[in-house]
Length: 396
Image 1 (tube, helix red, strand yellow):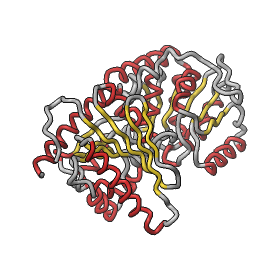
Image 2 (cartoon, rainbow, N blue to C red):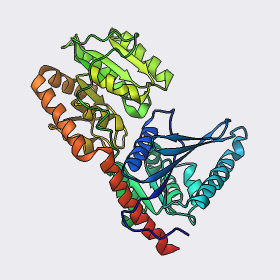
Image 3 (cartoon, rainbow, N blue to C red):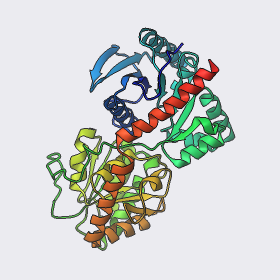
Image 4 (cartoon, rainbow, N blue to C red):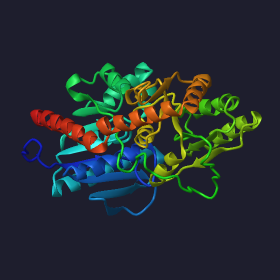
């Protein structure tokens, strides 16, 4: 049974995520930044990070919170999820017994939706919906049924975009359990005053020439192909532009993109960095004149917010949560997805007008400071925790 607590009192929070450092994807970044912000706002936090694979379980202190890394043997695929659920459940119950948590907040759909189901009578449960897999499942009746079953035990569901929030409602998540809170950004780490610097000896970026940065992994949903196809259209009118794609994964996609560039005679001064640590990203944004999110599917893009915090005008597609961070004509420009032509047109408008670039970059920074800084996102998240705790107590 949870202790009685006063509203706005310091909380004991458990974050559960199967995606965390050293991974550098959006969910991993979200979990890290939310943990930091909760601690900065005065709460106590443990983060449990289970992964499939062999390794030694260990506990480490990180920036004021505790990380518990659990390795679950995946050599028996037919029962690996059952083994995972049992191991993670038992570990969390042990932690909860020694220092009861006020709330468990988890960050992936499966298998942790099943893990948390086994903990539904132990503590209040909150889920944040990061996953494009959710949108794919929503497209079928069977998928929507599964979503409802997966999330029926959550005391609250947080969606980082209006699209995901609406789809949660459509799958039967009641209004009193359904919340929308965007992703956030560290506005102290990402800011317009980062200086141009040498990132790596492999990059020969010329600071006298414009750079367009695409901070995207090469996953098909991120729409990098359409950015690649826009490059010849831009260079037909502005041949001096340099392009940099910061993100890795999907080696076959990279080979395909490089072949497209060679066929178009545009491979020169197009740089693929592969995966880079988030700590290096401020320097990459400092290289750039313009940032782009050519996504086909998106929640609230953390990399987009990082670019905006860095004072860059952001060109993004009208999908998912991107229109919620870009105020078209004030902090960036919106275009239709799957359109190299519209991407190129937006780039050319910005490249030709330094005053417009500056105005949109300043607007982007201002919007981040007012709406998307992590301490504020964490405070909004705690209000959801309060609601979930009250709902859980009513049932128990």
